[in-house]
Image 1 (cartoon, rainbow, N blue to C red):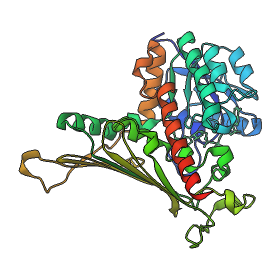
Image 2: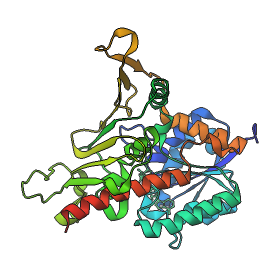
Image 3: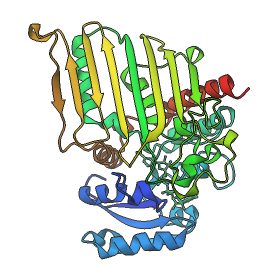
Amino acid sequence: MSDIILRIGFLGAGCINFGRWNVSWDHASRLERLGGFKVIGIVDPDTVKAKQVLQTRLASQNGSFYTECRIMADLAELIAQRPDAVFIGVPPVARGSLQYNKDLELQCVRAGIHVFVEKPMSVLPLDDFRLYAAAMQKAVEESNVVLSVGYMFRYHAAVRKMKELMKEHGGKVMAFNARYYYAYTEMTNKYWYNADLSGGPVIEQATHFFDLARYIVGDVDLSSIHTLMLEEDDRSGAGHIGHVPLGAEEDIPPRKRIPRVTISHWRFENAGVGTMMHSIALPGTRYEANIDVQLDGLKLSLIEPYQESCILRMRSMENGKRDVDKDFTFEGSDSYSTELETFLQAVRKNDQSLIKSSYADAAKTYELTWAVRLNGERNFRT
Ligand SMILES: NC(=O)c1ccc[n+]([C@@H]2O[C@H](COP(=O)([O-])OP(=O)(O)OC[C@H]3O[C@@H](n4cnc5c(N)ncnc54)[C@H](O)[C@@H]3O)[C@@H](O)[C@H]2O)c1
């Protein structure tokens, strides 16, 4: 399959697959730069939106990728066209479930189609999700397809460098500290504000950094997790946020609004301790995210991995310069693009081992984020 033109389909004509706002999401544009495929279908129940997306792409300089593309309201139509691979970018409430027509990934895998699916895996509570995950795992093994979950930071050049430096240094991680600050005032996907639809900020957003905790350090002892949340109706008044766009929270009662701040800490199974803070407070559209990892005699700070200007800052025992920071930069590196390129390569070679985020591995991140959420809710909503 190495040279053939892949026939691909998109599920979801929204932001992650086709871009919007001043953010870097847009799988289609990155795929267009990589080439080697033609799009045979875009599935979205909102066919008006999907048609607009297709018209825009056809009119662009990359229109040739879409000349055979049809708009479809249902996945069954796409499966009937036997695509080689699909990119599933629909809200988690619409997939990741054995409920009727929410088993999108499962239908594709069972049809022998390679799957790239976005995080989070689902919004289902763990007992129900585990049934789906087991069915998925069995289907992936039986169909022998490639499946990749969209944890793009695993492909980030700075994360790769970080793991390399830690391996060279040796020893165990003593401390992992991540901060993910959501910039919320100027854009929104309304469903992010409804935990029933998105899973809430830990499951939907901070999931990337819980996944990195597992990828960089290792699995978390779930019984050690302790989470505090600042709720909208906190008695101090500190949980009130006044700039939610598009009235996204107007029809959600204060008690059900998503937490404004989540702080969680835990023990790793085979390393030291970790902590994560997620907040909804920053103005504008630029998220801020940072991770510090400390080993004996080594500190690595991953500064703003969402930005092209991302820095990996190291303080180490190197050359006696023990009080001096050394910065690594990664201009031109694009983790989304590396992730998608790797997926296409894996499909062409039918080699799952190239994928850094398998379904079974991503399911563990899903379990971790639910454990964090439930612990926070138990502490504050009893
Ligand atoms: N990896 C990342 O950095 C990243 C960034 C943004 C979004 N995402 C993920 O991508 C997914 C989609 O998010 P988004 O921002 O694109 O949402 P969106 O609301 O912009 O778009 C989702 C689209 O899916 C369509 N849809 C709903 N049900 C469908 C179905 N059964 N079949 C086909 N289409 C359906 C909707 O009509 C909508 O057009 C979410 O899981 C989100 O977490 C990941």
